[in-house]
Length: 253
Length: 140
Image 1 (cartoon, rainbow over the protein chains, first blue to last red):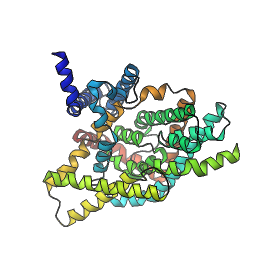
Image 2: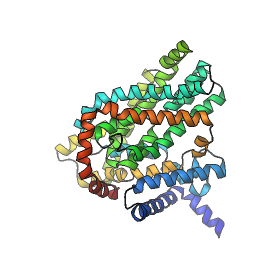
Image 3: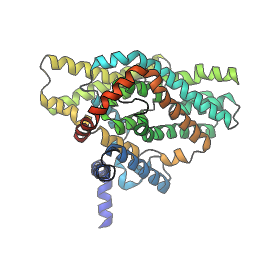
Image 4: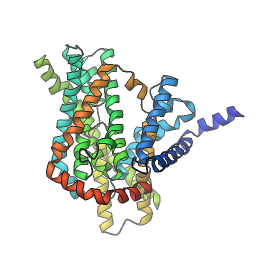
């Protein structure tokens, strides 16, 4: 009986995920209303619940996909995976005014370059602070602080050790997860309440999942603007980190 | 029909991804450069064009709006399938490196956004924000 139920949920994993996420959202909005009187967004609470569950899932299974590694919740991997996420992100662009995008366009592009370089420097400096002197290792960890995709790609290009590559992925994951949590908390402080600052935010932070969730938890109307610039960030990082930025590190080291 | 909206969305996504892929190949990087962003711009233009000509009926729009409304739940599912354990078990270098990148990145947002506009928007948002947010997120 229990086994057949288990098999059923496994077989219809995506549908099961819709139900699980629906319940999570309901619970999160209930907490938001009841205990914070709506001050902390239901979506912010739901994302933090998701992250907490992902931590538990990762600890229990030792896998890389959080709660989705538990067979009962495997549909979460498809529902929250890149394909549907990108489809939903693009759908948020419906009804966006192109004027707003164009007005902030130049600043967004400047923020993109600045964002990649600033994150890279942050990661690189921490690596140096922890005693790394090899330019390849410093560059790879710096690239990891750009996004968790730029790190391993850069490491593979430069021939970094697998230990350093793992560190760079972890740095990128920390950035992404902290962005999800810190964005709604600091939004007021940094003036993140209009399309222009959202586009700049997307360019400065760049890590797609972090930006997507951070803005969702802050104000869902800002999502398309932030996502639009953030979507260029990883590509730009892969372009800059193993080339110009590596040469700069080697020149300085 | 609703499927027209979904197909329009999917078509924009695929064209955007192809262009992003070509851009990546052109620059010699093994990654999609801005495919999603290009798809977003495409969707803005195409729906704008159709709307002006009255060729965007409500059923079509609802095919796009469904996925728009699914955005936050999808993001929650994404959060639940992140490798959080690895992020916080990756050692201090990773922890400090990632954290410093976030702090500096967030701190730079007002620098690039410009002081004047951000302060004017804050006062303006203080009044309009609470209720507009509620209605908006409730719909999502």
